[in-house]
Image (cartoon, rainbow, N blue to C red; front, side, top):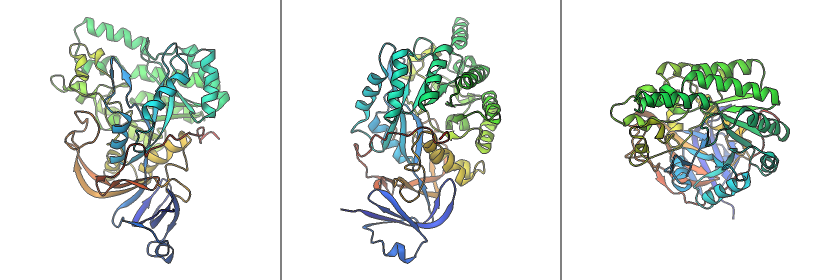
Length: 467
């Protein structure tokens, strides 16, 4: 039984092109693009016709950095794979790459199997995994080779969180050397965690316990120092490097310098760093706890460097680092001690809309919007052209987007399983109307028509900028 859909009359926007066209979908894939109203579209004989006149037709978003059901600080991220992927779909994202976690003393395989068990049969959209490497040893290094072969092609390490995820420079170098040989991509949380712990201890001893001090101790210079060190270790190892959640002007400068030297170094930022600041961390009472994440929010003046980096391609990707904790009962664990506030913010549902607002505001072009949110993450993580574009043969992960609709972001109306919105009350122009995942409607004219278990695990190739 073949199933056919025509998405008719919209402006198709990809990272490389904009054209008025009908998109013909057959059996879950894009069959063709045809000029609107041509005989090819009429003769296609579709069972389902989606009217996209006056709308954009864009690839589904690829969010390369989410943490569903992640354990942290004695609690768990509030979104499950079921609730988190459903919220992602509402926001126009059709693929996530989440992080499986190796616990110290355990194998990579145990961690990966545990995350497969959480996700399988529960996701509304397609998903893949990165692997967090917490325990570098000879067995772990051998396992990295096996994981690359089966489609887990990126490995995250932490220069932060001593005693939890932290790797020292020697462990980082060994993992990078292994990645240089097996084609894997090392993703780095670049903050000097050893130094930060000293500053945390000193701040608490001075009685500085409010959420705003979270941002003050995690200094931009310590992000820049760690970014520099990660780049040079990768250079020694002959390995590519992807630096996650870049938040500071000084860290962008380190990435820019490395790329100017021709090094295979990539940088990601997140909407919270582009749209929020330490002003939010300093909100009165304990409200600032809602905005505690690491790397932390920076003073507003850092935003200009991040936007410039996105325009000049010194930053290539915007992911969310979606790791939501409810204000009530979870963020509140840190009342009286900012270091106990679970680190993470909700955002998987907001990313595509916030970046469209940046198009409306003239910060980026339409095609750059699709590039940083869909195509480049797909290429970086070995999913392109299956994901991240609208082209014959690609998965029919397609969003009909109304660029004129207005909305107010609010926890009252969002679909993430968290009791606050980081963007509460923000007015945005642009809204997702209909979402297809592999040709199946997940959102239909602002109604959820998807189901858990539709989303499938998607093995990945190696980084496509290195082949």
